[in-house]
Image (cartoon, rainbow, N blue to C red; front, top):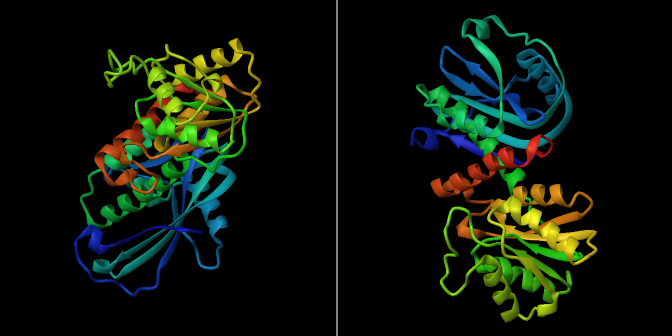
Length: 342
């Protein structure tokens, strides 16, 4: 299992000391039931945390994971996927810990079997959307040394899960068409032109008026996103006869919807297609285009717009804001069937 993060007193307290204590091992889960996720709320400390707990002597990790989930949430486990390991070195407490995180789908829901300590602390299971879980855990203000570590490890696991979910770009493969999602960054059309010239597809479908948040396209030379993209494609060697599109859509869902109209009106046959978009925009684009083209096999080829990548998005407030916005819009725009976060 890959290492997600190593948390030490340097991150928590600014101290360089390390403990050599034998690590305690735990099994923890991002537990999902459809588009809802489990979180344990401990009222005594106003603490939100992901479910899980210690691995007993002689117990394997998956057995411990299933037991902890059953005890804390009453749920039995369906599909289990590895997420990663978070290591803690709490030098000030001479304690080390290794937490194995998994993504778990609920098989059945029963009644939690909380310990007396958990009951005394008024611990309860809650279910929230992913955007709500992220906010609850990130907004928690730790009051103790231990709580700082509890928050840091869950935040690291959530960041890994979000990265795997949102940034779904892949290597290109041959397809029938390239869809360029609306926007104002030239890299989108430039990348599409490069794929075209390398014969990954022989037609490009562009779209967009301008964002519904604006009253005009931001570059004065162009009236719409369509005009902007088409000009870049032509300058980069794409034949005009291979360019299709529309200039009416104002947001991503409309990009997909109106692209379907373009395909139908031009009687284009598309079995495989490539979507070109910003890397942090990839999952939402994929889900929305799949909604309007349910029989098309899609791949997504991305570029890192606004200096936001899968490796750095959580390091800046702007990156976190944009990625969290994607999670929220997926929940709002894709409907119950598509809101299931992978």
